Image (cartoon, rainbow, N blue to C red):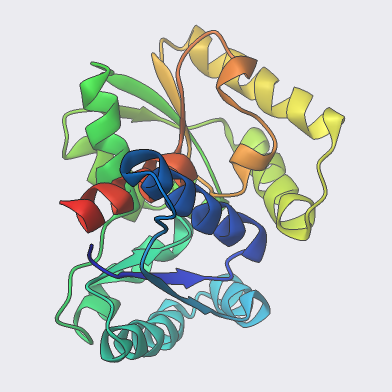
Length: 229
């Protein structure tokens, strides 16, 4: 079994889900008392979020690059970044390490291609929805990406940072997300990417008539695939 290097804390609520899913999946596949070989380095999200707000992506990338380098030194065979948004700085992190990073957008695209999805709606932070680093990764797999309108993007982002990242789960916010999903379906999307690792805390596959791709579950499961390959 390879050792998984996890960069977590963005937020810790979703990182805890990664740890649970990875270990449950290893036990399901191997049985007995098996659990995952992993090393978790958890950063202070307040610092990372400040870098995001100020557009200091290079500084954020250098912070995570140092964490990734420490994980490699500690024996990790590959890196899993437990957040969607911070995959923006993957190129900076890659320069600091020799082990691979399992990109969350690639893992999600593999699953969508398996289900023959060709047009998908993307929910996430404003950075993930509006900037190109994530959408382009998905589009490289010949999948069209549709994002909500500007007003919806603002509210989706607010709910992530002011509620979900603080562990607050509100029925009204769930209803809002489902309304946005309905609007995207009317634009012809065949599935929805839950492109923030906290969104799965709010809605799940049973909440919509079309496939919801929970990136936390997909990414964590893909990490187990690689660890056990």
